[in-house]
Amino acid sequence: MADLTRLFGHAAGGRPAERLMASLGLPQSDDTILRHLKRHAGGPAEAATVRVVGVDDWAWQKGFRYGTIMVDLERREVVDVLPDRSAEATGHWLAQHPGIEIVSRDRAGLYAEGARRGAPQAKQVADRFHLPQNFQKAIEQQLSRAPRPNSQPSPSLTEAEPVILAEWIGHGRQPALVEHRQLGSIGRRAVNTDKFNQVKALQLSLVVE
Image 1 (cartoon, helix red, strand yellow):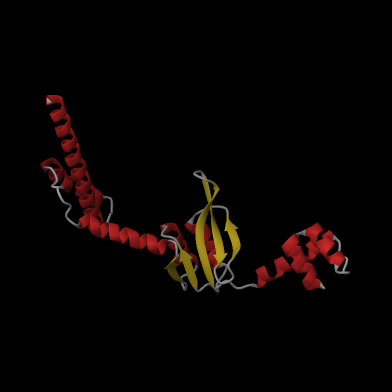
Image 2 (cartoon, rainbow, N blue to C red):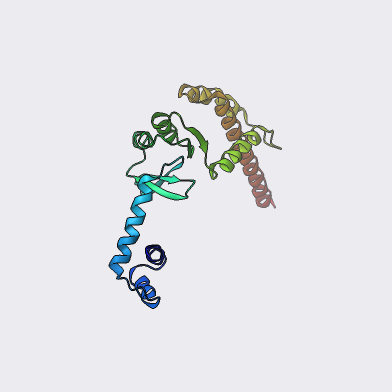
């Protein structure tokens, strides 16, 4: 009877479950049904050991205030919501759950640092959403290095590259990443310049005619 009460309460809510139970000859008040439901919801969640946790941010107020959501990926249920998005809060929560073996996270450095602090024994993996995103970025980086047709950079752009490159390296960026971004930027600007020159040439030809 307690199982039926809990199931109906979870599926239908208080008063609808009260009517269903009465039609089955098992009268229960809506308050009793909700008490059964709350008691059942509170018990397993406290006793459950989280082994694989998903960590991600979410917006309390989009663009202004963000928190962190913790999901038990094996049970597919939210286990906690943190008030902010920080390595300290993430590490503190993970330290309170020593049974965690795997941390699935996005590419944010603060979650990586939080996992290192709070669960050094756990293996960090990229979540399913970011795997294809990382793959896409890697392909874009490789394609940006390929020569583009009719996209020879102007002398001014070529001369400016070492200055920009040195400035970026000075800010601690990886040289290979800086190089591919510079090459991609130079290629795009050269293509746009070429298109602009073609448009201007067509405009001049129309004016002459």
